[in-house]
Image 1: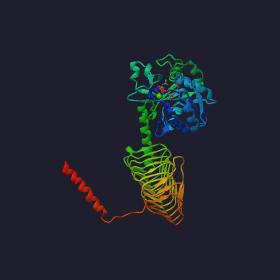
Image 2: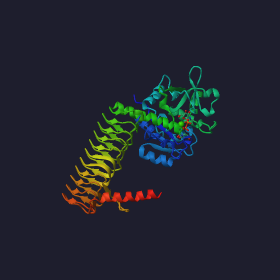
Image 3: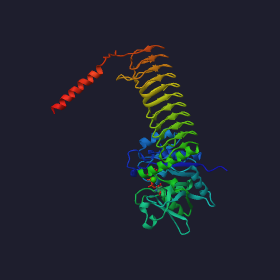
Image 4: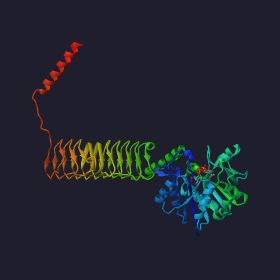
Length: 475
Ligand code: UD1
Ligand code: CA
C-alpha cells in the first residue's frame, strides 16, 4: 500500500510581536539553529514525497534568503500582509500540487518529533476517514494557546482562541498544538469559508475544525504524551525554555554516545556539535556550531569552542577560546589560550597560557608555551617558540607572512617582523628583532650591548636612601 501524497506546509509569515525583536521570530536560534531550521528538519525526517511549502511574509527579506540557502528544495509562498494562520494556509494552497493530504506545521513549534506526526496519519486512517486530525496537549497553565472544546462524549466541537474564549472555555486545559493533518478535498471547499469575525480580526486556521464538525465530518484531536514537544515560541521566555530543552537533548545524546560530561547542567552544547566516545567535557564548557571533539579528548572548564575540530586525545585545558580552528591529535592547548580563525595545530603541538594564534599552522610537536602572538605564520615540526615571542604581521596597511622551519629554536622575547623566514634548524637568540631572513642552521641575534658597573647597584641604593632620609628629617 502506498501512502497518500502529502504536502507539508510550514507557517512562518507571522510578525512575532511578542518577541519584541527586529529579527523575524522563526530565525531566532535555539541550540544554535533557527526555529524554522528545527521544523524543516522534522519535515525532512518524514521522508514524504510531496512539496514542502513555507509561507513567508513578515521579515521575508531575511527569512527568504536564509531558506533558499538552508532548504533550497522548499517552495516559498508569500503572504503579505499576514492576516492570520487561515489566510496563510489559503496562500499556500497554490503549491499543493497533486497532494491528497496537507500537513500543517508552525515555524515556531520546534521540538516536535517526526514520530509524533505519524500519530496524525494513524488517526486520519481510523474507521471512518477524517477531514482533520490535529495534535493536542494538556497543560497545567494553558496561557495563550487555543483551547480544544469537546462535548460530553469527548468529541471535538471546535478550537477557541484564548482571546475569544469565555471564562469557562479558558479553564479548559487541553490546548491546540498548531499541528494539523487535513484532507485536501476538505480544504478545497472549507478554506474560502473562513472569516475574520473574531477578537483579532484574523483568518483563523483553527476555525476549520469547527467547520468540519458542522459539516458532520470526522475530526480527531490527538493528545501527545509529552506536552513539552509542542511548546510554541511566542516570547523570549518560551525561547529560553525551548533552548534549554534542546541543549539538554544534545547533552544526553553526547552521554549516550559514550562521552563524559562533568556537571552536564552547566555545559552548553549546540545540537550540531559531535562528541566522540571517551571525550570528557569539564563544567561550564560551551561548544557551538560545527564543532567536533575527538575520542578521548578533554575540554577544560570554562572553554568556549566554536566551529572547530579537536583531535583525538587532545587536551584543551581550562578557559581556552577556540574559533574556526583545528587542534591535532594529542595536542595540548592552554590554560588560557586563544586560538582564532584559521589556526591549525598538528599532532602533539603544545600551545600554552596566554598564547594567541590566528591563521597559524604549527606542525607536529611544535611548541609555543607562554605569552606569545602567532599570526599569519607557518611553524615547522618540533620548533620551539620562546616566551614573549611576537610575529609582527601587520605594518599598518597589510598583513604579512612569517615562515619558520622545522627544529628551530626561537629564544624568548623575539619579534619576527614579517614578511620574514627562518630556515630549518636555525637558532634565534633571546630578545632579537628579526627583520631579515635567517638561513637554515644559522644563529641570529640582535641586541643592545650590555654594560656592567661593578658595585654600581649598591652605590645606587645608598644614594637613594640618603635622599629619602634627608627628606624625612625636613618634615
Ligand atoms: C496558534 C493557534 C493556537 C495554537 C497555537 C499553538 C491560530 C489562530 N491559533 O496560535 O490555537 O494553540 O498556534 O502554537 O492558528 N503565521 C503566518 N501568517 C499569519 C499569522 C501567523 O504564517 O498571518 C505563522 C506564524 O509565523 C507562526 C504560526 O503561523 O509560525 C502561528 O502563529 P502565531 O501568531 O504564533 O499563533 P498563536 O497565537 O501561537
Ligand atoms: Ca505561536
